[in-house]
Length: 111
Image (tube, rainbow, N blue to C red; front, side, top):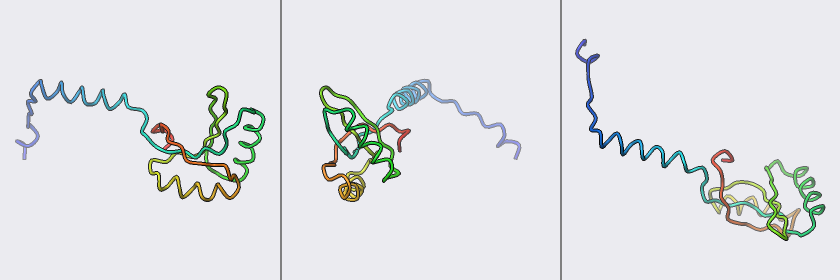
């Protein structure tokens, strides 16, 4: 039993270097490819803000807006699977008929 407590592992320095590289690369990846539901696209910021308030009152899904001149985009949800996004889209389209799916980068914090 005492021999098991004294086990020493000598790792090859190349293995250590490769594992350190692997860890640093994976730590630098902060987003994955995924899907969001674009609720509205408009050039009118007030309309986007009003839509956001209305959306938040009706759905518990997180939303965010982006501005890419000249358009404001109100996006909701964070989905890795297109099928999951499409399922939620059908519910949202009942209240916001212009909503559609859009590919986006999803941060790990949102999942």
